[in-house]
Amino acid sequence: MTTARRLPLLPFLALSAALAVLSPSAALAATPAAKASSAPVAGVDYELIEGGAAYQPVPGKVEVVEVFGYTCPHCAHFEPAFSAWKARQAKDVSVVMVAAPFGGRWMPYARAFYTAQRLGVATQTHAAMFRALHEDGSLPLGNATAEEIATFYAARGVDTARFLATFNGADVAADLQRAHEFIARSGVDGTPQLVVNGKYRVIGGESNADRLRIVDRLVAQERAARRPATQTKR
Image (tube, rainbow, N blue to C red; front, top):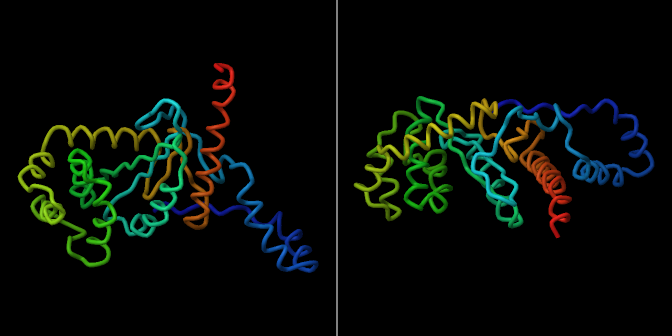
């Protein structure tokens, strides 16, 4: 994963020290609240994507894309936090997964993800794929064959012949190309990477929770930006 940029701390040291003298508990409580409520900062929390576009736009919804790779250990670590965050989202947030076709060992599993999407089993097999690669080792991180991956899905009710036909088909090849184009225009160079509405690439945050708080603020910003137009129509 690309190294996250650290928030500048020096301007706040004097204030933090003063608060600690007066009330240590108050100082500790104020910092997360301030971070959670502050507006996201360009160049610190996110980078604006020039000429960016949503991956799968839905009218009236704010899109949040996670670019990930099954072989990426950082993505495996991030998955539970992101899954819990996704479950909390309002109906006007569209969460989209994009498997990165970065080449080498990334490719079989990116192809597997789009195959699973085409077959309607991506959601129920997503966490299990991470476990198979990073916990129980039932799938190889490198040099995985289509047949090995098909066995994983067969254990979860997917017909092997159908899986392999889809895996090697033109539709999945088109999905891989579409993902490649989105990643290129969004400036994504690592995983996991979060992109909001095709406009903002999240670069800040010192933890998973921090990064998701930045996403929340960007989603709120996008939601607020379209509110006047909605009110005018009423």
